[in-house]
Length: 109
Image (cartoon, rainbow, N blue to C red; front, side, top):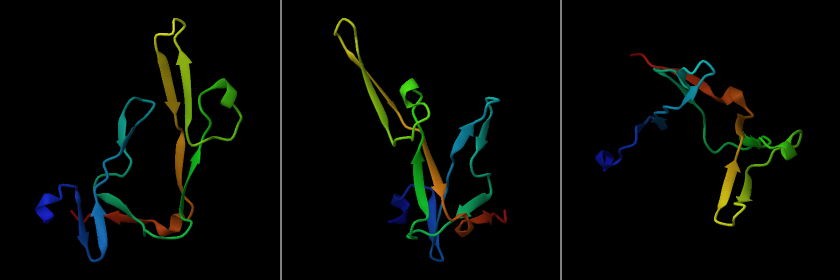
């Protein structure tokens, strides 16, 4: 049964350890891991009012200086009526409102 689970995670002592390989491209065009190698972050699941998300305004003139929405969708009709171009945008910021519950983990390897 465990052989069939190909995700990079495993349970140990009531904690599920899961690999996270997220990266971000910096303005220098270099890539950086969001969680450094041999480190991790632990946080409890099922807590009340801990995590939330905020939406930022879209990159549209009409959305400047407004409160952001979770999703923006626009459609542009081809002048000759041949097609409709759909544009969607979401600028979501996830926030841990109780950062002290997150614990930094280090590998002994």
